[in-house]
Image (tube, rainbow, N blue to C red):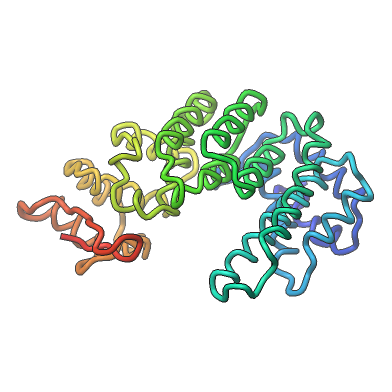
Length: 327
């Protein structure tokens, strides 16, 4: 069976509401520990394929479909996970639309009721889902959306790591996002989350999952984008090793570009120069431009690391949560 074959079956099975076969497919794929080229476990890919397929269908009642599934199979981990993911997607969409046009969507009480319903179903299958990374990722996401403190999110994450035999990147991304760092500034919890990720997965991944945690945080949090090695607690030598481990195991152009970006922001001139020389000109990505400034970060770092002596690039907020000014 090809790597994508089980995942490719999922949208059709879901469209036909063949929940019995989806349950069986979920169980089959849960037992497979291999990773794809992006570091995703087979189960992560399976869930993304059929969940995103349904999420992208205009007018689809995602929560209604999830409710139908759990009604038919109330003890199914797959059904509970899907309902949870459908709920988080739907509530996130409601929040986004309400920000654009306040008062245009369901009340918070309605959203809270949706989240609680999904959490009750996850609790029902907690025993069956005890070692399931996607059960834990979904649970952590929903308790965060329901107002859990960063300390409670960290406790749930630590509990999950004690039970999951082999967590992969999507679990760590979901848990990091659940800290909601833009609002909570929970940088001590982030630091502990990254350390626990590395400790749990070091035999297989080296320090790669440390990088996954911080990359996720940096991509979603203004403060960390400005100063990834400041109060966040990120340690540059550790991050340097982690990014190397991530690229060695799961080579991607994203990591190949992000590594010199972070070396430059860490003001490690020798390492920045080395990494830029290893980055072919045709592989330079637009992500460099997501660090705004009067001069693109790529040109600033290249000039500093490879050209005549210049001050190290720094980023400063020109207005909180708005723009970045480079000097």
